[in-house]
Length: 304
Image 1 (cartoon, rainbow, N blue to C red):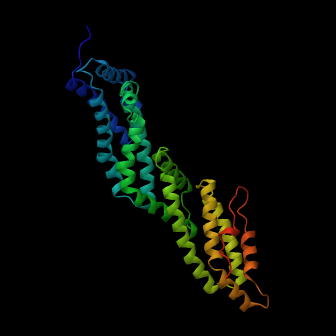
Image 2: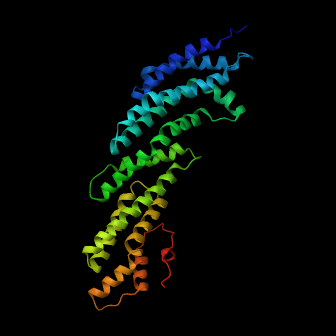
Image 3: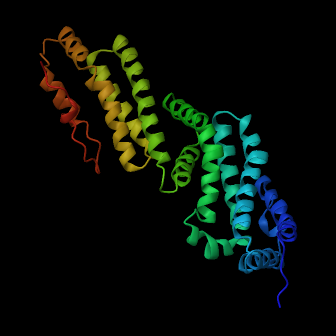
């Protein structure tokens, strides 16, 4: 008859693996910490504790220990590593911690894998992988999202102002936003909305500054140049649909909201009579290029 593994004994065995796995968060490769025999020892321990007859089926307790191990690692390592970082350094550290965390959870979930087959499905609770994402989202993303967002905005605006930034960093951060949502919460969409609002504010202020010191012709040429630059930059890290929305915002702030001022400026600078419809036509001719399905003219209010 197979020997019963009691809860305290099993947890002591697993604690060895949990403590070692946490070292992955600070950069230790899993292969330097665990052998194949180690994986089998911890897996077999969980398997035995889950397959014992009641009252010795400890599946629920093991599921909670897995969750607690994730939360402990986040609180003790991930959050302290992020709390003193700002701007690009914050985003770099976030991506490194996220990569290390995924490596750690892959290792831990290997130990606890039998829970997915034996326990999770019957209880209709998150899988081990979903639980890992949920813990990171609740303890890291939800708490520090504002800082991540502002750091990304800072990089975007620095690049608009001519400073070289790591575009791969922005792209990878946006990929993180998609991953952390896990198809259930659209964290990318939340960031996209804030990004569009920030771009609207940036270009609204820029339009005011440019209109004060530029002729009508120079302003139109500047708008075309700004659109080309924005498309080239943002196209490196945004999805196509997001890029189209961004360019529409930029065009509206630079041409749509300034329409009346531009008409008056044109009339004052030449004998030509630019009308609202002429300007609308010029605005519409600023094509987004292939892939755009958005109607430009519908965004213009009717002339009173």
